[in-house]
Image (cartoon, rainbow, N blue to C red; front, side):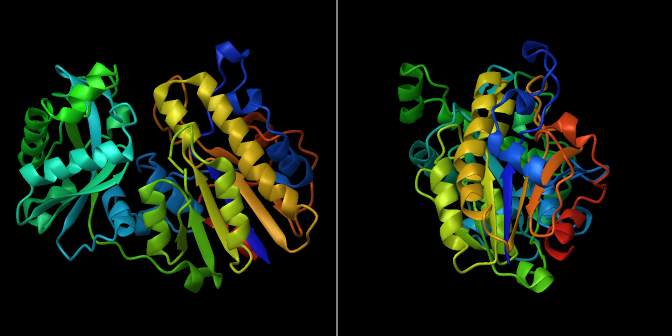
Length: 398
């Protein structure tokens, strides 16, 4: 039996006037997800527990069958796991974004989606200037990086209130700096980064090219050493994860999934959709389970880019869902689950905690006459998981 989990990050949205009251999912051409809806079942899932932040890490922990209220370690530790950075007891890991600041405004959470090559140079420079025997910076992918503080629990850094930069686009930096005991520790690093990056050669080039400079770091998503049961112990299945995003790959590593890196997987609009599908099919030759994650719809939502969000959904449907569905829909021993991890509405440019729709198709899943894969159509379903982590049990055990 093969189990296939396909996540289009942030695909869900709200009805939009520009689309005649439809959502991007309804407006997009998605014949393959529609096939899953028509021949399988639709349902709804609450991936974000009450009183938890609607973040991708929380949502994907839930989707993979783990209750975030028990197992959520923070974004930093998940990304540390993927980068091979070992956290000891008392250490605190932070997500470190390269951002663009202008006066007192945070104008871009991604520094113009800076390339990984440029970003690695910038992070090395920051590490050379700001690290010490307790603080170290590690390069990741594009604008997404890591800072680790040894013994950071002493300053209660794990208890700080830190704003995700994608939630404060064009807002005042001074009003959104870390808050709580020990906040001055982080604020000083962020302010120092701005002083040293303003004259960095890469930023001079980026400005000349009319690209947003990486002129500040933004620290958030902190957490301590995680402990999660292995997926194989929980479900008795071998598996793999395919994503361009460190937090997803780190989550996979923590639960014992094989991380498969795909050339050209960027975590942005230009990602290698078809390469991910091919890698998933190859993995399923000897694995029982595969989790394919595509970040592009979420990035479009954060950018407020309706055209790119629809295109990202259509590419996800054609090149990921479609390529995998074409191979498996004539087979018997399989199940496919497709869903967004959360909504990233174009109108808000940030995540929300609303329930999202899912489609499931395969062995022993009887079609219920749904017309299409969309938020509106899923409202007709009586299949609802208020505890999001229970959906994986339904996929595998029902």
